[in-house]
Image 1: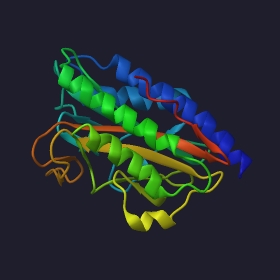
Image 2: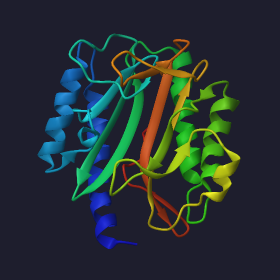
Image 3: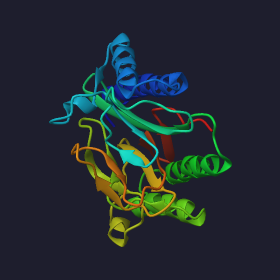
Image 4: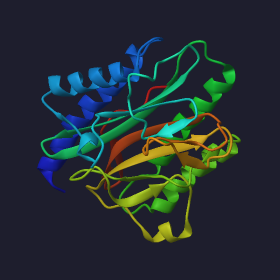
Length: 249
């Protein structure tokens, strides 16, 4: 286990979790996605760190921001504005001392229906169940199975086209960690000191997603509500440590 990597990622993760929560708490009706992005850029810079997502070729932003049926990779434009009743997803990453961290939360803007509250609670629970499987030697299959079971038991659908991933020296690394369990992933096992971004991506309806004309944003094909929760996690000998802090209920 590289001590300098773990130290840097713990420090960066604590900052990223704080920034994620600050952005979610400060998102109000009338705010443009570009304004949220500007706040994210400033908060990352204030901590002496750098955005991670802008290292992806062709992507120039620190965040991906989505609403309602948009699942991931949404460009934070000035034209997109937060409205009452929206479900907002903020995905954000940063680099600390050369190491990447990644986290996502989904939350609702008042007024919030009981149906939406239930949907978001299941996503949080699914991520908790998945992370709870983590320890040295665990298979990716077991992590994915925990997510899939939790989501489907509640009557929702887990996304199959996009996955979680290793993270650290790069933003996206092996292994892929799907939201659904595949038999071949029984052979893929995590090791002590590994850092992974575990994420649940799911939908109220059919989880098939399609790419928008902007070439980045994925949304549900049937227009149903989408959600995403993600944490960067350190694998330890007998368990795990959430580096980006647990998503609050």
